[in-house]
Length: 156
Image (cartoon, rainbow, N blue to C red; front, side, top):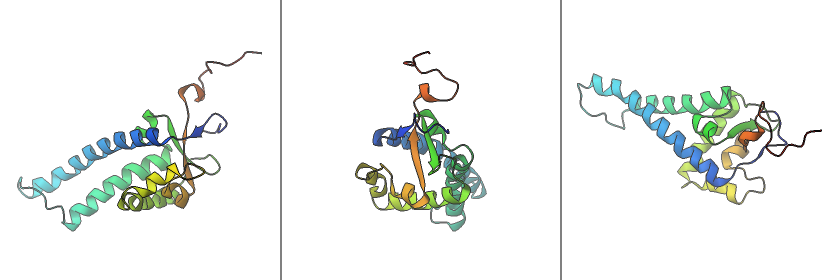
């Protein structure tokens, strides 16, 4: 999205709804990634502290978020809620920025969600991972997306 005039800062509840949506999708992917580990163990449950399993789970979650962020600028949850990840120039961030964002978002969660709650006190409504990665999450109302007419547009 290049027209930052119609975009607004993302509200906390909209971002939270997007997170819930993405968590459900990631949970399904982790479930699918677990199947081969269960199959290898002959149907027995997988020990969560197994290094290979932990690496597989992190790889799935990393690929989901960084893959979507760096190619489309949005995950499926973000798309559903009209959110777009941008760098400071309004472009889709690269893999490096998205990897930093991913790592710091883990820290944001590990600190009891304080990195996400930071948005409520930040003057620019940014989270810790937004600040660390030089990104921002913007809200684009459906009427503001390219190719759609504004409802209150005045014709000249």
